[in-house]
Structures are given as C-alpha cells and as structure tokens.
Length: 253
Image (cartoon, rainbow, N blue to C red):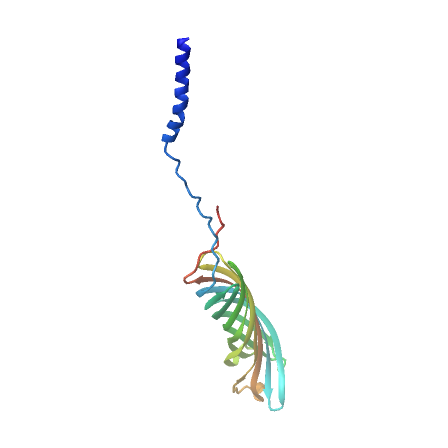
C-alpha cells in the first residue's frame, strides 16, 4: 500500500512539471512570407539604333519629252536586295508609342527595257540608295509593338540610254527624287535593350525630269526624259535601345 501511494505521488508530480518544462522552451521564430515577384512592364521609351536588310521592288516608267509632245518609252519592274540602318527615338504613354526615325539603305534595283520611242535604243533605270524620314504611331502589348509610320522618302537614281546593237551608252543622267512613304511594322523586345521586327514600306516617288544633250540623231528631238517611280520594301530589323527597362519575366510566388 505504501508503494502504491509513493508511485501515485510520483505520477502527479511528473504531470505538474510537464507544463512548466514546455513553458521553458524558446518560442518558435516567426518568418514573414516573401512578397510575390511582380513582372515588370516593358517600356519602349528611349533612343535606338539598328540595322536592317531585305527585299525591294521598283516600278518605273520612262517618257521622252519633245517639242511635239511626250512619248512613252516603257515601264518595267525589278526586284533586288536592300540593306542599311536606322536611328530614332520613341516614347511611350500607357500603351501608345510615338516615335521619330531616319533610315538609310543601299539598294540594287535596276530594270532595262527596249525603248518604245525607238526600238534601236534601250533604257536602264537604277535605284542605288533609299532614305526614309518618318513619324511612328504604335500600340504596345508589353514587349510586343505594332506600329504604322509615314513621312518623306528620297531615292538616288541613274538613267542610262544605250544602243541595242553596240551596247554603247549614249547618255546618262543622275537624279535625287523626293516623295512620300507609308509603312507598317511589328517589333518584339526579346531582352531589356534588344528588339527584332519586320516592316513593310511603300514609296510614292512621283515624276522627275532629267535634261540632257546628245549628238545621236535618234535623240536629237528629245528635250528631256521624265521618270516615274514607286518602290516597295520588306525588311527585317534589329534594334538596340539605350537605357532599356526590364524585359518581361514570369511572376513567381
């Protein structure tokens, strides 16, 4: 009996000491959950410079102007490569993107045809340089940008008239022609500063007269020539933007 009383007293004492032992343990430190990572918004604002290359097609018509009137010499199309660069500045307000850009390209657009004015003659019209000075208006979806552009265009041209039999050039005339352009493009920013895109431009170059003098009797009545021209361009563009903001990243929690 005495042993039972002692055992019961020991169990009661152990039970009373358990809460005190638990109270003596250090409290578990509280760790605050890290805030979620928010995906930054791509900003198209800033100066940029880049390179472009692609395909162009020139449609040109040559007329000969004489004292008796204007006589068609013929029209022709010729496609070839274009390559060059661009520099500009864009600024973004909400999803709207505005920009100014200057673009210059080397071109190899040349067509040769037998003259309707005199079948013993042929004419070659060549465009070897193209410049664009445009404004842009775009709509951005984060790192994707769709835009339209328009402004002034300039082309460097050379017209040559030569004899079909001998292949000897009789006269050449160089001209710089100004006109207008409209285009549309899509661009994607794949890093904070680099973007790639594709663009289509149509150039209306109007008419330009070239005066010349030549002793060949077949051209004695010609006072000057009149060349009309349209150009289409499709180019792939790569741009580097200075001071770029963060490229889009996936949010993580």
